Image (cartoon, rainbow, N blue to C red; front, side, top):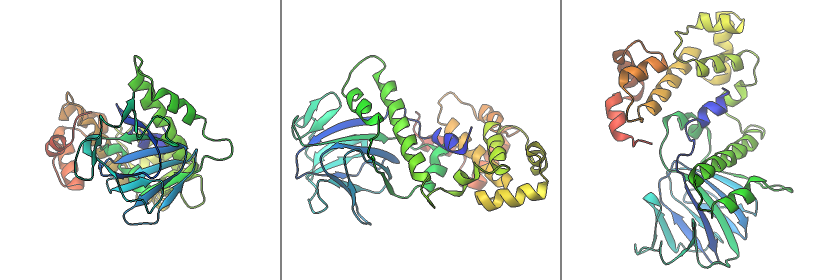
Length: 312
């Protein structure tokens, strides 16, 4: 498992909210849903992402935007258009006065807007549940990125645009996987830009640190030490520690602790997972050791974390 795959294991869509918006200018949608991650793609027409605390970003047909929550923002035909619709938690659509709009603006399966012949078509996919494994990915992303569609366009967009309006058996799973592919493609393109990739992403290509990262991520339950990890990748302890810290930003065992606890936090969302089973899976000898590490690093107990985090 490479570092990007490991981090994307967190925001893997599970019944993600997907919507096809068909709109005529002037339009402005105020997004206040608090979602941790949203992917938006402009199929045709004009669009802008207008943050509260930054410069507006233009969207052109074929562009894919990745928006990190939970801060609100506006999607509009023009940065000067005042908001007309508010999309709140649970994807509840209302007027500025709170009057519901979901029924009056419904246009069919997962389709919504001002009319079926609107000049602007926007696809939106929202990862609605916070995922602990994705914390590293979300921390590496700026609040918003826009990946241009390019001359040939993104081949996934026509497929997603077609599938989002279908209502077939297993359709939710199809849409989840298409959304994941769209996100992964956008992140690959973004991280390939000079200076855009975080340290852990660049480290994956290093001949020493890359294999070490994969060993830790693929087998977190193994009783790793710096010495055993260094032996596994064929370098000295000092060389591994120095190179790992320089590229990743923290020592190997600190990285392993964070990875184990992120996995544990995600596993604890499963309703049938016991603390003992989770501890074994992520490399702690017993529930007490996991609880102590969880409290030390995250400031709360596993029990409190589970109570605060909705199940998938």
